[in-house]
Image (cartoon, rainbow over all chains, first blue to last red; front, side, top):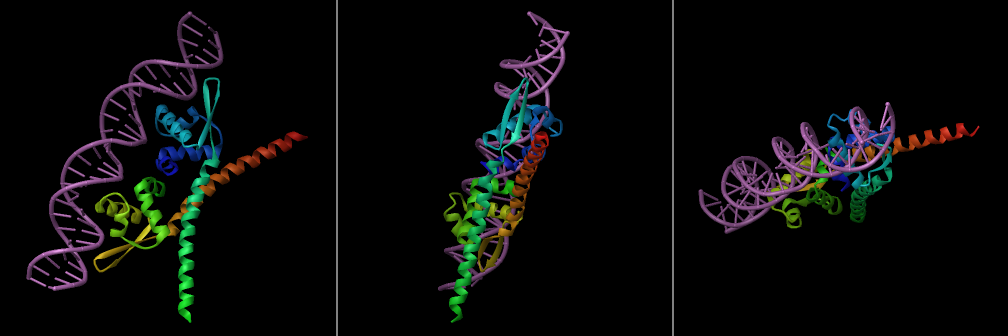
Length: 101
Length: 101
DNA sequence: CGAACATATATCCCTGTGGTTATACGTCAA
DNA sequence: TTGACGTATAACCACAGGGATATATGTTCG
């Protein structure tokens, strides 16, 4: 889900903006997104569904903010992949050592 | 490019398999992918284009292996996003401290 | 209440892309 | 050389999903 959600450039840009500049209203996000307000709302809906943002209603505006914790699975996945790589590398080292004598 | 490439479940599964089990032939990958061989070749083409895998020709088979280095931008991006979050958190702390006296 | 505003939802369109089958290309074996 | 094999490419189909416009919902203000 995370990869898919972050795959779209427009959506990722919105998320990055929320990370960089903190809480933003839909209007503020729309004004710099290059797409229509409904499109932004849709993207925010998907980001929210993925747990990447949360919303806070205040009067007639909705403020969105990034939920960094949602990125943890991504870091875990990346580390896991890197881990597999290193494990295989260690195996190779072991193999070479055993071949040594 | 990375997010988009890793967004597809089938393609990501192929990449994970290459990470876990090292170099594999197209045939081996196909047999556990659940999709046709041409589909696998297509996915491998995109993974290669994204720098996530490399291929090695040996007779009539092609061996693919994961290029973990390609994941670095992903880790960097994630760290950068987390960094922005912490920076804003620090700003908040500073603000609270200044409000203290 | 009624009008302007902020956002969300509905509907539709259109492109991108993941899937298939068919086939071409290169390689090994007989 | 011929045929079987492994992989890549071509051509096509179906559908997901990102975009726009129109409109509904909810909120503030006069």
